[in-house]
Image (cartoon, rainbow, N blue to C red; front, top):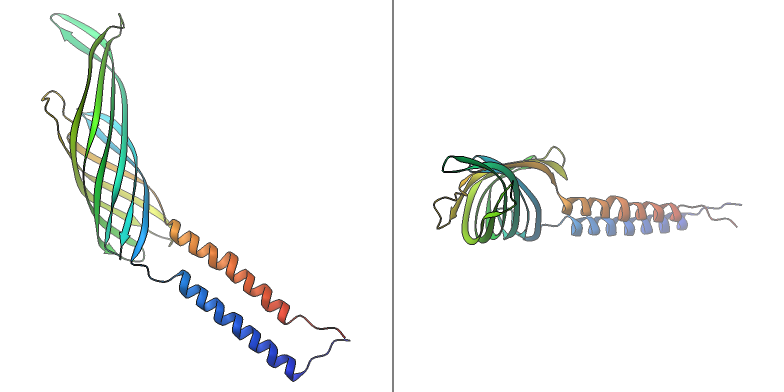
Length: 231
């Protein structure tokens, strides 16, 4: 036999109200405003060195301050292989060329526009790196040039993030890279651009924690409270 009483109903309401209040408190804590948030980005760029297309791979790690400032460090690597003829007197010698470049920089982004569906950033970065240029005679496998040197780099430009959903979107960036290198024959200056997928890992963590863990736990606890008692 299943029995209910006014006392049971009052107790059930009190328990559900307590659980609801705790869920609201947990929600407010999870989605609370944070002045400081960690920042991480996988950064792939496309660029040109002496009119040859290259891919730049790297990452950025730092901290976002309030909703307007991001600062941190980045590391980038470039490896490019190509074939090109070298003119020596009247001969054209086919060569294999390899350019390896790596650098680290400090960056700062100012968030000009911060809206629900779009963000517009302006970034400036400055750092130091090292490059190696290897030129080998294709026929004899003889090394014609093997140079390693340090260089300085400064870059700046805008980027945009379009967010149709609060945790995923698309991003695009462009800018100009200035380098300080003693050799006049080597010129790393040039435009760069990039595009890719933007993922808000922080928002994903908060939503999963709230909707898949805390809210489901809340519903199960409420069901247990209203489960009929048998005498």
